[in-house]
Length: 521
Image 1 (spheres, rainbow, N blue to C red):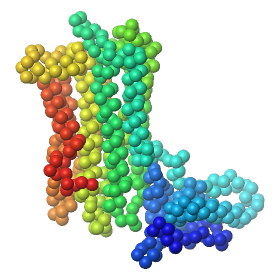
Image 2 (cartoon, helix red, strand yellow; image 1 turned 90 degrees about the vertical axis):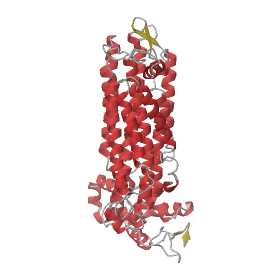
Image 3 (cartoon, one colour; image 1 turned 120 degrees about the vertical axis):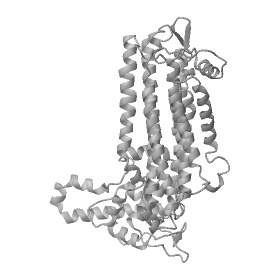
Image 4 (cartoon, one colour; image 1 turned 135 degrees about the vertical axis):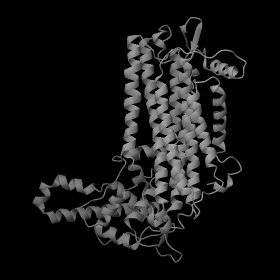
């Protein structure tokens, strides 16, 4: 019988246990696609079944290969209810009624298997090992949602059907923080670092709190989501034949240590150390020392605007939100790395020899992947420029950031005499932004080198035409150069404006107009 283009086998009423029933169904190819003659394409293998389950799982986690291999073996491993649900959907061929019938039948077969095992052990042995039996009943080592590691859980935030919740969360958090700043009166606030200079340090005047969190970071997260959607739903499937597709979950889980490192950096360094060790201490002591003054520390010099207690609560919320944003940003870089590493692995020389037809699309897919990584990198560098720009302004003697930038531009054009001075304050943001810049550039270069090796689709190793690698790399290089020039030379604002304009244009046209059609995916 055929259901939804797949080979359907009705549940037998022979009283067989789960192991016997599963072995029979796997050998028959129940639930597999049918060929032109109506026969299944072949029996199930652990690899094929694991891949099929991962495809129907909305989070892309499914069941790992090792767990599926246990089902094929004659052992004492049981099967979890979650795994039975996946098998019921496979054997039911996606039909709701058939799936429900198979789920009940598989659950009954599992119960019969457990009863047979207890009978073999004997009554005395069963009593002494009740705890062990309970563990075995459901222990198939399946990565169910409750047991999924940090890597799979985090990746699921980006690849779930409701993954747009992430950009909305970031935007809502920024708006909420801005509203609280407005209520507390620090949305637009000035202080006098010296006589005749009234400096604006309000929340709304800070690009790293407004433009970055309200515009750039949500767009960056959308780009990461788009990359995962393309890779898991199109690119990866085009490069591997069905019989050789490996689970994406294993690839993600292989970078679990990176996710824990990112979590430590965000929670321990960005939030605990930077807030409690620097800002909280400054607020409690009532002395900012040589730290640059902004709206988070304004209570030290303007207690008439915001009290010390209010400032402590506000800064705690601000740095907690910042830690979450840093975590999401760095996770995006890890996912860039993961996708490219997966692409490089399945498009290597050995894979091309074994599957020449499946890997023929590797050059086009690699360019499509890199375009998304390029956009994400550009957005990331623009965010880093916002951090550096705000830090440079707060260290300068400019009255507000807009006048400061225009004064610098007029100076290089000869319309304004003099150069912006410095207040001699220290900015922790200079160090943190440099680390982010270095990490972003390193990930981009790694991805570029790997992508170039995959995109060499000609026999002689020549690079495919029409992909403006040098132009995209040049945009990234120009943004990095702008970072080091901010506040360092007179006229940096002109370079910043040019690099920002080119970067924004490249977001809409990364292939620079005339090259769009050959690589459209």
